[in-house]
Structures are given as C-alpha cells and as structure tokens.
Image (cartoon, rainbow, N blue to C red; front, side, top):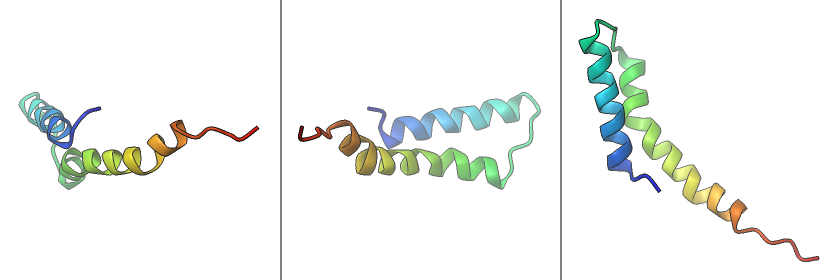
Length: 58
C-alpha cells in the first residue's frame, strides 16, 4: 500500500514538472497534490479493506 508520504512526493514532483514545462499551478493543483493522498488513504482503510474482507454467510 502506498503511504501518505509517498503519494505526497509523487504529486509534489508532478506539480514541479508541470511548472517546469510552462504549465499553470493554481490553488486547485496544490489542493489535489497535498490532499488527495490522505483522502484516498482514509477511504481505502475505512471502506475498501472492509469490503474486500467481507465473506457472505451462505
């Protein structure tokens, strides 16, 4: 599983690369870069792992 720090580094590198190539980095880009990792990690822990471990009683 990817950790928050790994996700944050990947998104940070992407923002730097976009800027270096002449792209525009705005508030939305920064919010995605630094908040999407924890958001995904929270829902992965809270819902995905529980759903994958579910075993119906037949």
